[in-house]
Amino acid sequence: MPHQVHQGSHTGGTREGERPEGRRQARTRRAAVLGSPIAHSLSPALHRAAYAELGLDTWSYGLHEVDETGIAGFLADLDEQWAGLSLTMPLKRAVIPLLDEISETAASVEAVNTVVFTDDGRRLGDNTDIPGMTAALRERGVERVESATVLGAGATASSALAALARVVRGEVTAYVRSEERAREMRGWGERLGVAVRTEDWASAAAGLRAPLVIATTPVGATDGLAYAAPAVGGTLFDVVYDPWPTALAAAWNGPVVGGLDLLVHQAVLQVEQMTGCRPAPLAAMRAAGEAELRARS
Image: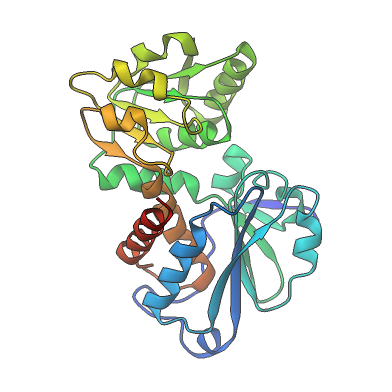
């Protein structure tokens, strides 16, 4: 199924401040998060809290283990009850050929984390990670910085660069583990309009002095940098949410934005697109995420 790039985000058409009454509210509606592995996902807690707060009694949100080989079949089996999907790895790129349209934001990083199904059966893809990152930073008072550091070079790093395109005035330094990753990050920088300089991971401690540091690496990858946290740091954005805090976040002497902040802000945008109800209940969703993490620990 060919896809087209389109502008803007997908919404259900409800005016701001309204609840989706009538036909949308009365219908049984389903949504879910897909990925592999998926058992750890906080998305069900966040979305279900939003539904409860919004009075969406006929809405449900599930969790399904699906990999690249299974995504086409899963989509083919969905009926008209389905409103949307949240996607995590390894599906963010694998789903793109299966969609009718993707947003410019999703196209910019070749990654879709949100699928909305229209009443006429079309599949629309978007990426709420990027605006979720900028919203999480804005919540901590970070709207513009002169320079930034990115730790890591995976899929989340490309989303971080896309977010930084809206935030950083100058250069972004990416600390990576291989020349192949360095080339990829420079390529993403050119594509996204961000000046990217790459350095070897061995010198990453020097990058912690930037006014904004975004750690996009998996659990444990930055633990060895905790000793180098500056006495007066800029803002640290660490995308890990469990376990929290990471060693680096615990040692940081400055504002810290965590992975839960990112998850909540991107989920707020997903709820708004899938339900058509704006604004989604940010505080209730964050509280649900915090409660779920406490229960796990």
